[in-house]
Length: 125
Image 1: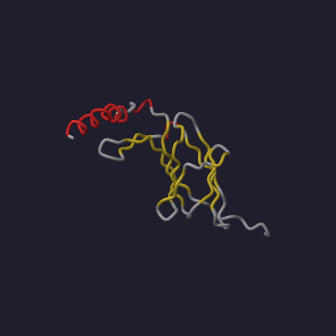
Image 2: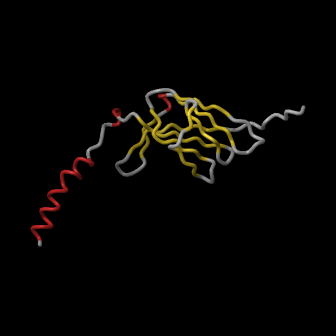
Image 3: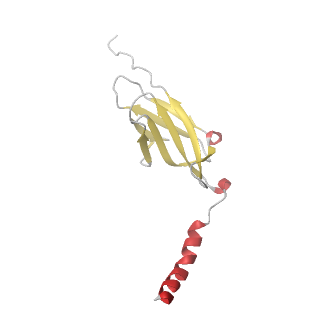
């Protein structure tokens, strides 16, 4: 019985070692963009396309875009769900990304932006 357990552990060991190998930080080309907003929730487009890899935190006021290519510039279009606010465009450049520690031995490339939506102008006036 011990031999079977030992053999199964030895068989799985190379798999664990392969997954444990990490790329150097300079070789990682994707990161996340955190956008803090003054409104809850917004529709998101990155470079004119819908972006599905995103989530909202902080009561819907913080938008996190995952898997963004950090080696090129991007235009993030935000359209708030509140009709009295106007949409805006946020420019994210490669130099905006900083290496941030998120765990004991875990780092992520992150760009942080802040957006204040302006009140929409009345069309009737």
